[in-house]
Length: 437
Image (cartoon, rainbow, N blue to C red; front, side):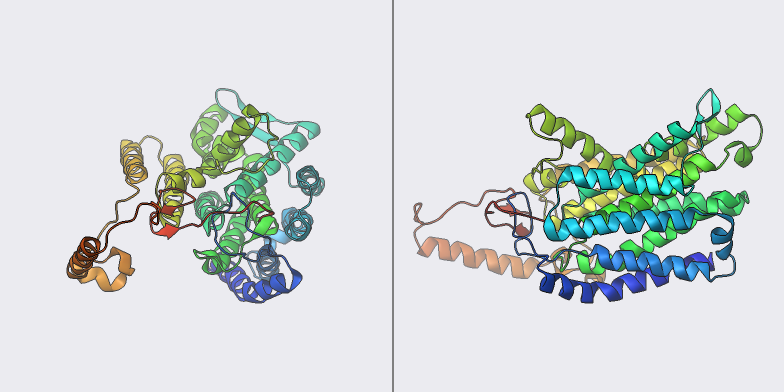
């Protein structure tokens, strides 16, 4: 565990320290597109944050290669090299897209090639645990097609959700944390060495996201761009492929093969598809494809119908919308993790139901701002503190001003809650149509 944590910290430190210079480079290189109609930020912001994340990935793998225990991952498996080669290719495509806005079909082809490069080096799905059937061995072509499909789906799911400051990096970090706990349990508790690469990938992925988040939280100073979103999507998919298709379920739980598969269903099947670890991005991806196809548009045509856009439109502020997406991602990911550990516990199911109800309440109360107790006000942002006297004085001043000055309906324009008006605590001005991030 110490070596995994060291790898995580080195990855996060390198990513964090490089993001500042990368931001300056992006400004000089002109990777600051104009604000598009569907964007929610108000000022042009540099992209290319994926450059720092990629070098953080390289640093993490390099450090892990020189550690005593983690070095065995590189000597006994070719998966880290497969990941690095595929990540380098997808990163180069993302950098070109951040600077020159390449065609969506070209990016799709690059994603498939990157997945094929990883398959050629051994990072592929060899078998699947199927309920009531057992472990099904896949042919080479079946494994290749399934691996490529999983990589492409995961990359685009993460890319689709990258629409608010800190959203994609935070959600992937949550997913990576749950994935790390699951894969580490398999590697440490059951002594399955084939789960070690996936555990390493999850640790490095957490470091990449944690190192980039301080620069990307609202208001963001830099965006990761496609060079970052496609990169972290590929790393997440690589970990899922490694542990889903190469760890024999019968070696984990003993007993009959069907019983072993049944116990692994809560996490294995969702990781394969993937619907629990990145359930929110996957749902957003499916809804976007259906919505655009129904309108007669290309599935790759950008719009303002994503889930985070809807949260802004119903009145949530930027920060609140991001936190709500974090909440649902953590609930699904860690709920699946807890259920995989003890699927017979009714307390786990009850806890998930209660937290889901809390999440629904948060969705329906966009104007509600929680207040902390007075003794804890020094530890929270000012907007969560009790300001009775100041608020009363401000309200009284506003009332007096409104009584003294007549209201001219023609000169005053009402503010409408929505993306083009005020969303909670965030005021967004009208957008002009143009090229975007």
